[in-house]
Amino acid sequence: MTERLVVVGAALLDGGRLLAARRSAPPELAGRWELPGGKVEPGERPEAALVRELREELGVEAEAVERIPGSWPLRPPYELHVWTAHLRPGSAAPAPLEDHDELRWLTPSDIWTVPWLDQDVPAVRAALPRLGAAPPDA
Image (cartoon, rainbow, N blue to C red; front, side, top):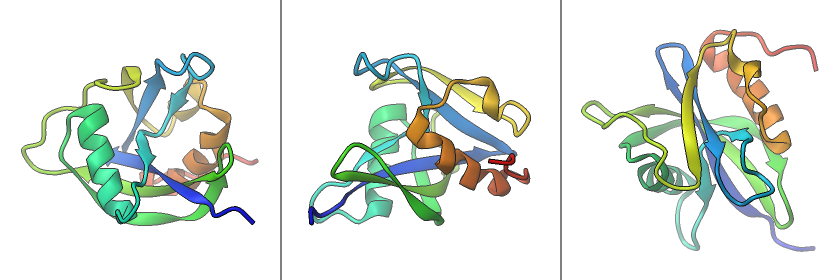
C-alpha cells in the first residue's frame, strides 16, 4: 500500500466569509476554484505547511486554527486535509501571487456561485458550519 501524502488546504475565514482562489495552472485545473494551500514537505508539520503555503501563494501571515475532520482523496498518492485559518493582525490583504489569478471572499450564500474543483467540494461543505452556515444536502 502506498503511503498517502498530505496536501493542506485553508478554509481562510474572515467576518463570516471564506476565501476562494481561482487556479491559473496547471491547464487542466485553470479557471476552477479551490481552497488555497499545498503539499506538506518532508519533516514539516501540516499546520506549518499551511502557514508557509499561504505566505507563498497569497502573501499573507496567517495562523492555522483547527483541523476540519475528514480527509479527501486527490490524485494518488495525495489526500487533502483542511484547517480553518485566520489572518494575523497586521497581515497584508491576500493577493493571487502563485498558481492563482483571482481571489474572492465568499459569504455562505455565495459559496456555490463559483465552479469549485471536484475534490474541494466535500471539503468546502465540511467548512460551511464554521461560517455559521448549514451544508447543503449532498
